[in-house]
Image (tube, rainbow, N blue to C red; front, side, top):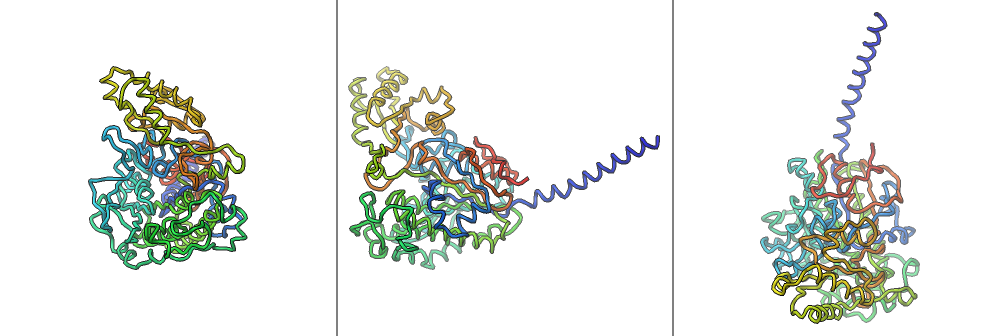
Length: 551
C-alpha cells in the first residue's frame, strides 16, 4: 500500500515538474519571435553569382548571410514565366501564378480587350510626384502575402513596408494590407513616391528624404570598385555583346553618369547603375527609422527589392565587368544595411531571407561565339505567321485576339459566330507551332486544364497557367533562345539559368547550415508564417522549410 502511494506521489511530482518546465518554454516561444523580418529580393540574381564572385566579396555582406545563416543551394522557381512581377508575387504569397494571378509584368486581359500592367490602378492617385507613375496598387494580385497574414494575426499592429526602385518590386511583396509601398521615380524629379491606395499624404520622413537631394548625388562617375584587372570572374570590358548607354560610344568603364543623364532618362539613369541599389538601401534605412520598425515585441515586415541588378543585367549581360562590379557594390550595401539593423533593431533580433525574382541567360550571341546552341526568336515575324495560318486554315479574320508572352489568345466571340470548336482550333495552332524552328514544346488550354503534369517544363507551364487570365495556346522556345535584341540579355523561361536562384535565411530562429535538397520559391512565405506562428497566405501551395528552423 505504501509503495503504491509512493508511486502515485512520484507520478504527481513528475507531472508538476513537466508542467513547470513547459510554462517557461511557451513564454520563450512567444518571446523568440523576431522583432523584424526583412524579405530581400535581388532582381535577376542567378545562384552562381554567389559562387563566382565569392572570393571578391567582403566578410560582412553575402558571406555573413551564408556563413551564419542557412543556404539552400538548389532553390528554383517552379513555374513559367520567370519575370519580375510574378517572381515578387510568388516569393511573398507562397504560391504560383496559377493561383495569385500575376501571370506577367504585363499581360493581355481578354475581358478588357487590352494589355494591362500588373500593378497599374486607375482608381488611385499618385503621391509625391506630378506624373502618372504613382497610380499603382496590388489590386490585380488575387492572394495574400505573409505580410498580410502577419497584419491580420497582430490585429494590424505589426507594420508592413515595401521598398524598391520598381513599383511592382515594392507593391506586390508588401501585399494588400501594407502600411505603405514606396518606389523611385527618376526623370526630372528623383523622388520616392507612393499612391493613395496606402495613404492620403507622404509621411514627413519620406518628404525629408526627398527634399534632402540625396538621390541626385548618385549621378556621378561609375568606375570599378576594385582594379578592373582583378575582375577575373567576368569577360573582357570591351566586347560586342553589350548595349551600354546612349551618348557613349563604347560600353566600357568609366561612365560619367552626370554627362550621360540627358540622353538616358535624366535621373532614371540611376536605376541602371549599382548606385540605384545604394539609394534603395539608404531609403530602406530611413524607412526602418521613420516607421520605427522592429522597435517593440510585435513583429514588423520590411520587403526590400534591389532592382539595379536587373537593369544592369539586361544592358550588359551575365558575363560583364559591369555586372560583377554591381554585385561587389551590392555586397557593401548589404553589409552596411545589416550593421544598421544590428544597431537599430538589435543583433539577433531580426530575421532575413534573401532570394531573387528570376535568373538570367548568358547573352545568346556570346554563347553562339562559344559554339553553344543559342539564338533569337523573331516574335514579330512569328506572330504574323501564326495569324496567317489561322486565316488560311479556318477562313476567318480576327480569330486570334492577341499573341504575347509566348501565348496565343483566341477571340471566343468569333469562335461562336463561326461555329468553330475551341479545342480543335487550339490543337491545329499547336500542331502548326511545333513545326516552327526553335519552338520545342506547345501546350493547349485543354491540356493544361485537364492534365496533371508533375515534372519538367510541363509542370512549370501548368503552375504558371491561370485559367482566367492565361491564353489558349502556350509555346516554349529551345534552351538558349530568347525574344530580345542581339545585345544584353533577358529571362522568362523555365530553364535552369532562369529558375536557379539563391535562397538564404539568416538571423533569429534560423539554424546555421546548408542543403542541396531541391527547394522551390513558394516554400518561402509559409516558412516565414511558421516562424511567426501565423496563418499561411490564403492561396499558399508551398511548405515550411523545417530543416533550418530552430526547434
